[in-house]
Every structure is written in structure tokens, then in C-alpha cells.
Image (cartoon, rainbow, N blue to C red):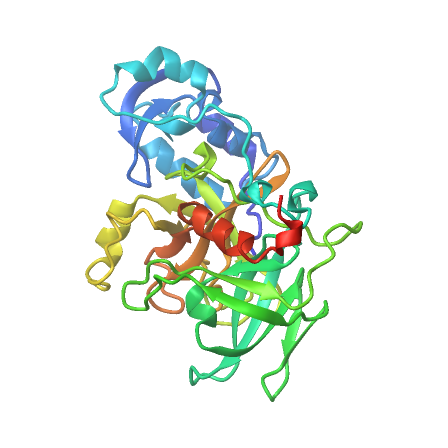
Length: 373
């Protein structure tokens, strides 16, 4: 979605010295505590500066990080993003407590499923798990569109509010381009699959907005074992997020919704977002959504636009995710926000890792007894 600007790395070498070192405390643009460090000590910034070209978004990010520090050769890096070797010698002196995940192995929720061979399937290194969902029902808006993610050969994960009153659902797994007719029917560059069962979280309510998660059990399982076929996205099995998915870091999403100009897209579009704190999210949204306790509710993940584009209307149910070692990991499901294109407001997603038990229970109890371990 975002074209690269003409700002080159050479411009930033003029601004920043690429030597190791650490100094004063600072506050990042996301409102999180950090330290002013040279870029070599902060992998996120070092990666930006190592690219032959940088985008305008990266330029603005680096500029904000530079302004937060007194020395112009240093950048404000979130504590959890500073290299461990630097943290060990410097961060121990601060009063701020940080949690660092030291494990380099992330286990997927799907590995805990028995039967059906789920544990033997490779996880997605491309976004073949992405699903365009066309929904018709009794909600008074004709056919609407949402997004889902293939998590096993038989199940797609999406938002409960998308499918709660659906009469008919068509799922286009691994679609890139879709089109609609005057009758509101959708066609895609892949064949549609029907839905055998809609499984809503039993605690989902529209007013409170929590537990906005649902499973679609496909009428025909996807052949995920064939060469070039779709692959499920990994859902980390623990309730604690991987360090690179925590506040202050960037997450990705995609969908077939509105862009910042209010134009609907029939081609899969990418969005890059920054995860922000629940406190900051409440400050921005709390007055408009008084019935939603965002600050104290770990069921939510909040993100802010850093490119002008966001997960606007039509992106509901889309995965909030990150990539590590070539594999995609899903941590959120796009749930709600304010306005169709009002990107000055944060967007709220369902925290998928808080629902690992529910997902496992729903799928496991539907596995035939003769296939259970």
C-alpha cells in the first residue's frame, strides 16, 4: 500500500552515529519508557537504517525517536527492544520493570490438537491463510465483507460480530482479488467454500465488545498438504506475547476494506500498525465508548496507524500478526474502532492468545472420537 520515498540512508548517516552506547531515559512516540541509545543497540532502528531506501513512515519514526533524545546521535528505543547485551549493563539501574521473553521457540496452539493430523502441517510463510468472507443475513445491510484466517484445514478464525446473524457465508481462502455483481454476489480468484457451522464465543455481546471471536467450520476442509496449497497461520499457545509483538512494536494486517480515502478495495491490501498501550487507547476511545473497559481488559489489543491507512471498515476479522524466522504468527483479530476512515483514533482487536483455551476446546470436542489420541 505504501510507496517508498526518496529519502536515502545517507541522509540518516549524517544525523546518527552508528556506534554502540547507551545514556539517558526517554519516552517513545508510543508513550512507553525507553533509553536513548545509538542505533546499533536498537535492532528495530538499525534495520531501518540498513535498508538502501527508507519509506516516509520510517523517516517520521526515526525523526520522532531522535527528537526524544538530547544527543542528536541517539534514538529513543523502547526498553524491551534494546539488545540484551546492552540491557544487562544499563537497564538494571532503572526503576522501570520490563519482562523479556528469552525463549526463541514459539509453540503453536494447533500443535495441541489431537486427531486430523494438525500437528504435522507446516505453518504459513506467506499469507495463503488469508480468507475473504462474504456474508449475507438478517442484519439489514445486504451482503457484507469481512476477513478471516485459516488456522486448521477445517477452521477459519474471524470476528463474532461479522457472522453472528449470518444466513449464508462464502469463504475464499487464499484470495487476492475478488469482485461483486449487482446482485451482491462475490467471486474470487479462488473457489469459494461453504460453512458447515458458525461457532460464536458464548460470552460475546455487542455492547461490551469483548470476546469478539468466532470459528467457521468449513463444509469442505482445505487441502493444506499439497504443494502450493494454503497453510494455516500459527497462533502462539501462551498467553504472553512474543517480545516483538508487544507495545511499541509494529504489527501487520490485510483485508479488502476501505482505504484512507474511503475507497473500497477488491484487491488484498496491506496495513502496518503500531501497537500502543491500553492506557493510551482508553484516553483516545474511552469517552466515545464508555461501556468498554479497555484499560483493564487484557482481552484487547490496541493499535494506531503509522502510515495514514488503517484497518478501516471491511477489515473486521482480519489477523493482527507479525513475522519471525519466515513464519507468520497471529496475536489479534480486528474488532472495532471509531468511524470508517477516522485514522486519528486507535483500532481495537481481540487478543487471540487470551482465547487459546476456548479455541482448543471448540475444535477438540468436534473431532470424531475415533480420531482422538
